Image 1 (tube, rainbow, N blue to C red):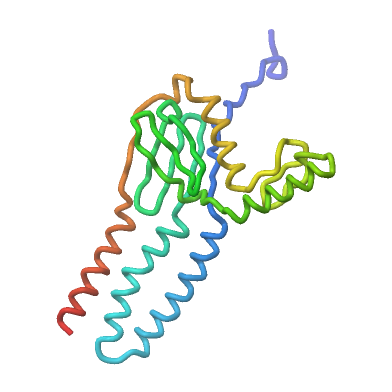
Image 2: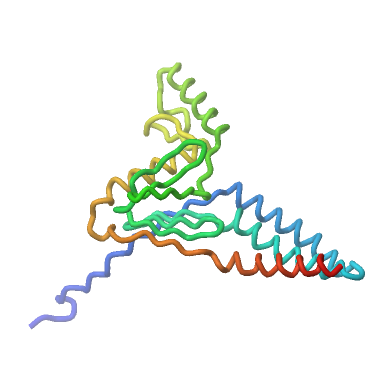
Length: 219
């Protein structure tokens, strides 16, 4: 006869694979500043303006705020176990790893599908300045006889003892390529590429543009 203490304890379910989220800290910071500036100017014009000014300011706010959010706060890249989800200013693209043909870095970072379609990764912008800085630090490390240790985990993306010094966004692309190479042939990483328009951004911006056009036309 077994006692409760002798019975095997239930094993907790294995945790799900959490997506790795990549966003631009510079984009987020600039977006917050722009929203604060636009909000301050817009609210001031609505409260203190005369005649048609408050209505024009309101229409501009409805137009500009979604666009600022779209290009600064919204972009993100979610790297999951089975798929890559790219949230760009006006679209959300879901790419199973099996449909990815390449992840390319040039003057912009892009993902290329097997059908030949190309999508830009807005959340992982290329910084030529960071690349040059990383190259200089790597050159100094090589000259000192310690290649791959100059980064020290700093903002340029170098990691001590883990290969050449890389700019932060180039290191992100390296990590995405590694995950893609590990998962592209797995059964759960197959499927179709889906693209969804961001109507939550396009709708308000279009409404603001229409209202602004009407106000200007009737003025």
